[in-house]
Image 1 (cartoon, rainbow, N blue to C red):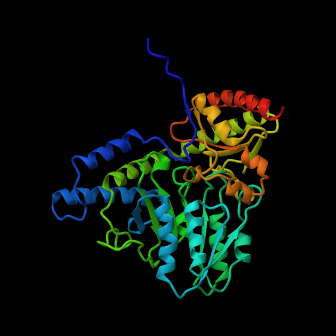
Image 2 (cartoon, rainbow, N blue to C red; image 1 turned 90 degrees about the vertical axis):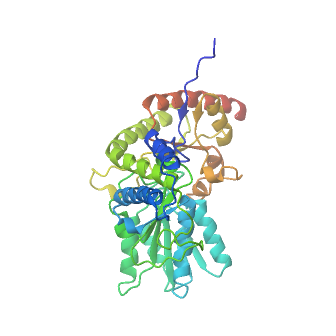
Length: 406
């Protein structure tokens, strides 16, 4: 008799989500029947070009942009690199000062470090204890030669939502005679998780990724506001209106387009159900485990409530806890043994030793940072998975503390 299949709880959607069946079918179709090069002039090429155009319209629709303002890339990391380096290359004499935050994704922070070695001045703003950077702090650090401000919309480790609209308004008010610094927003964790109605009204550039919401890996997008001069990183055939050379990844783009369409249709339900699950998760963890601490905002964004901007809020899919006496990486593997999958921080940097740079910037003491885990929900998450996690967590933390607190 085969062994009984153990129930699992996949709660690492901020790292990646399972591919949706509809997106997988779109990928299969684009790899088999519609395999043409979208730059080819014959019917196979035209069919592939139409697939890319439909996906471009889907992304544009989701972020309230013009399809001509959407550039397809290989993912969020390339989108961030293209946005930052592309706009600085396009305006080499405009300025040498860049403002970002200390809690950005490594693909932004690594570029910032490279820019410093090339003669740019980079200001990294520290967040408050809830993981939110204030617009007033951005304004205080603007200089006459500030050319770019790069800030994420939703933090990938603690879920805190940054005041992008206020930052954009601050940039305009600081330079009433223009030109204002460009605003780049890393919206990888925001697409499909929170409303983005005003994002492309306020940002000049915004980065997105397909695999965080049920699309395939290896594909992303960049919003580039009409009129923004963007020098490409790659020289070649001039695809993507000259902004990103290389034959388009048609299967990936097709899958991303389908996933974005589905995520957009589900967004009202996502906000409600994920918000409820997140709230339940926080309540049960803090009441069931002594000394447990929530890192980041407890309040989950709800666009239907007034006064939302007056308090720090989080996206509905990310929550970060610390459990003193239970080292995060060890706890992760204890949960894995019970069929529960979580993270200790950003997946792209999980193999690097040391405390989370996000928690460190928030002022979380090293011991608490080392005992942290990130739980992230997604389109497949169910209440039973949350219950499975809670049951496994209570036992795992208790077992670890028996060893560490002798």
